[in-house]
Image (tube, rainbow, N blue to C red; front, side, top):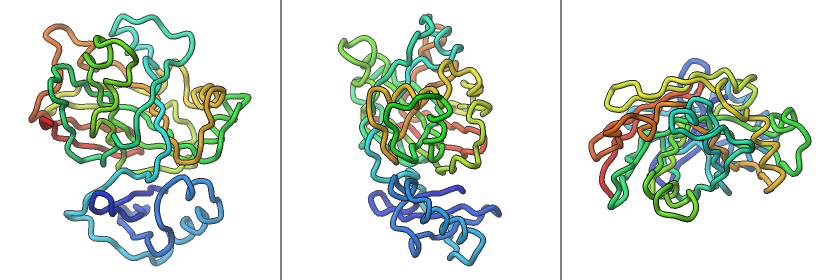
Length: 284
């Protein structure tokens, strides 16, 4: 299933994109698309049954699409998780996944405006596969168990400010948590529709120019292993989001002068089966 949340900021309602591409209202059946839904197989089954029924049609024209997951508990990022990206920035292949956290209040919809922070000169793009946890994960024993705890997948732009992240000391978090820095969506695609998350094409354009053209097969730590690994250090709850790294092609990896984002730039990105985003960047 392709699950969405649509409507004004803070007043989104749950929706479904059916197999014919028609947007349908789920608000008469569920209250939100969130961890509680993903963890409840009986409710998910009712939604699946309703998909082929007579759900009300929503007029998509002019309707804002919000982030497809509500009430996110935490967002965990994985750094340098593609061989090509590690090589382009001159980093050694990590022996273990590199972790950072993004605050849920950085989340915006897939086509919402993204703000370049005041004083920023190194705002960068990162098209990424996002993983949404479907059942509580603690101390998992295998990558297969990790995959079994995935509720769905979504597209993420892990926007990053590289000076804040790398040159200002401390942790990466300063460059990852500026407002609007985590566009999600447009859809949450349930895990049954993505039997192998390691075969997905990932692409990103800036002002119409292709910058990233990768595939999740290049991940150093695949999705199942990432979930297993994280579960050794933190409890992953339904609705938590894992941002699994970006392929080569970010601004930081380009020759000088590096083409960091400026106000007025337009970024578009997509992952096959997970939809497409478009953001105009403006000054904060």
